[in-house]
Image 1 (cartoon, one colour):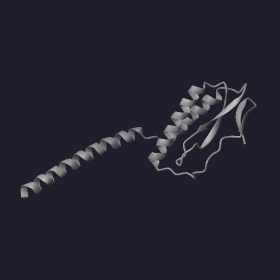
Image 2 (cartoon, one colour; image 1 turned 90 degrees about the vertical axis):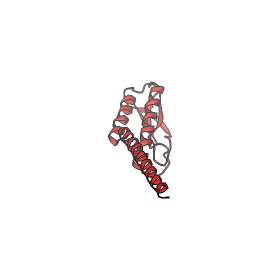
Image 3 (cartoon, helix red, strand yellow; image 1 turned 135 degrees about the horizontal axis):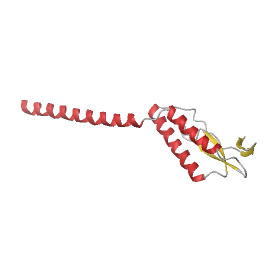
Image 4 (cartoon, one colour; image 1 turned 45 degrees about the horizontal axis):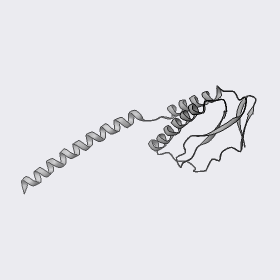
Length: 132
């Protein structure tokens, strides 16, 4: 009986050490992948710079931007129809995914209000602008 208890104790100790080591490895991997507010701000600026590099000449459109913790976008960005839509969608999707992960990492909360798409977007002084 004493041998069984000793073996059980050794087995439990070995398992706890193994779990601890794998958790430490997983935590260090997550820390390397952590998204910061500065990273999000820089990515958002990249998206805005891309949009602003195309003056509106024909028409404007809009795209949902950001990821609220409760779901849905934080806002809608207006852009010129002359942008490469695939490039813009890829940039916005990457930002939205990063913000979603940031929300999970930080336990972020929001007001859960639904942000409605714009009623109208138009070209004003060469800049696509949301009009509500």
